[in-house]
Image 1 (tube, rainbow over the protein chains, first blue to last red):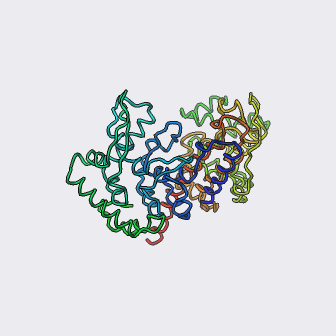
Image 2: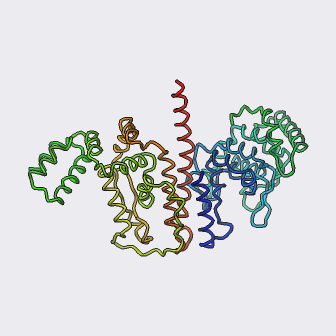
Image 3: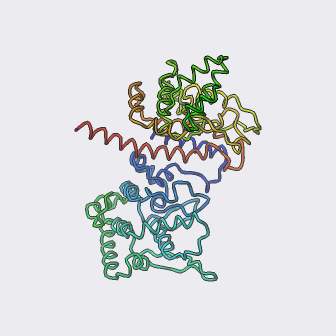
Length: 235
Length: 245
């Protein structure tokens, strides 16, 4: 743990000295999340974790950008993500917080996950822009295929009514808008009853959590919800 | 004569021939005559594992702490840059070195041709002195084009995969325990050594960023930390459960 704290200081010193552009700076915490350094993340103060906007992205998704892909990003069987997602939720991170970086606002971690996941489920096999990207897509496909991660996220505060856009990679066509329901129908093989039940339950959980939520945190609601999980996950 | 004896004793094991030849070359450099070389050959076990055992038995007492620690770290940490492996000595003496060390941000890299820097020469000499014939340093021609003069260049590897198997055996683990180098965890040592290496090689004197050595060492440190979390936790669990039994 001391080593990683020192690495963080070294990275900051190096980037300041080398004048690394803000967009290309490395966050040791984000990288630690990406490789499931559970004990390290656990011992950090909650405020340090919450200060990293959009950190749940790193826990939810393999890296899709080839220039950022590190060797553990692709094909790492340990990247099931659930323990670290649980840890981040316990620390107060929310799936529905908007990620802000460099003064710009992006989607929430959940929206981004759904967007990427649906894309991975539908992407034509013959149109991969790169082997690395395709590998990341396959990894996400496997993760979503089990449906349990989606159930888990909905049980832990993900917005069942979130909207998102994806580019279908069809030449000449602009990005299309989707709702979370479209994605869920795909994940649960068109089982309308199951999808609706899941969404209703998620809405109830969310409203209950929002009522209990302390300002700026989701952890109170999360801890309350932990006992209710029905997805049978061992986290 | 000597060549025939080597051929007969080798029984087709090429690695054994390599190791024996190295040993004879060392004898020659110490001005051994033919009789002494023959005796050296006769004393060399023909079985590889027995050969490795004899290497461990013949470690100089002055180096034993360093050798044991180096080999223990090697089992979990190789391949490793020589620049990181050189910190084995500090691992034995004072484990705060990685935190006290200042980042080497300003050193300018130099073009490398066929010459070896003093730093590389010294660090490689220590690997050979402490871990003779078990570990070796490999040099990549690609990495030699440009290098920081103060950072040893090269990669420490096992001289053969059978060495790794031998050092991972319970027999050698017992030796590590005997010489009290079991604690602290060698995986933590790998993290510290790689951190110290990152600090020593994080010069900002070159562009583009992708060519910064230390910057990319970040990945290796995180992976080593992951190994610590997963494996050391498992070991602790095994220790506690076996203690209960």
